[in-house]
Image (cartoon, rainbow, N blue to C red; front, side, top):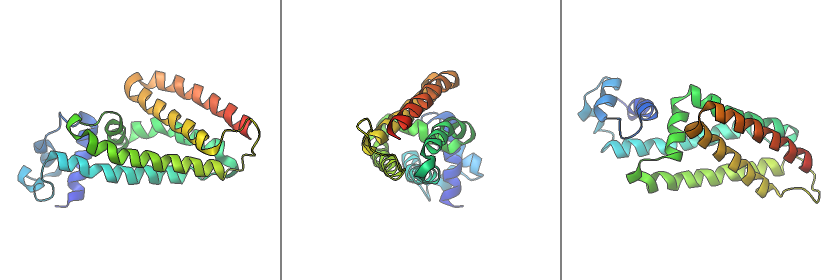
Length: 191
C-alpha cells in the first residue's frame, strides 16, 4: 500500500465532506485497508491532510503555466484561466479540495495551510506579471504596470473562487461575465 493511494482517497473524502467530517476509518475503507495501516505512512489525519497541500500547489501552478503563456493571445489565455475555475471545480475533487483548503482551512491547521498557500499565490502573481510583461502590451500613459495588472488578475481569481464557494454557480457566472468585460477594457486600454 502506498502513501499516494491513501492520499488519493483522502483527497476525495476531504473534498466531499471537509476535514472535520472525514475519518481515517472512512479513508481506510475506501483504500481497502485497516486504519492502522494508514499510520505506517502518516502520523495522523492532520499530517495526511497537510501532505496534500504541496501536491495541490504543484498541480495548480503547473496548470496555470500550461494556460498562461503570454504573447498575443494573452486576453484569451486570461479568459480561459478564469472560465476554467468553475469547470475544474465541478470536475475535480483535487480542485474542490484545493479551493476549500485555500478559502477555509481547518482552524487548527490554519498557519500550516496558509503559509505555503501564500507562497503559491506569490508564484502565481509572478507568473501573471511575467506573461503580461511578455505579451507585447505597448506602454501608454493609461497602461497598468504589469505587476499592478497581475494583482488585478489575482483579485479576479480570488473573487471568482470565493463566489463559487459561497455564492453558487449563478452568482459565479454573473461575476465572471463582469470580470471578462472588465478584462476586455483593461486589455484594450493597455494594448
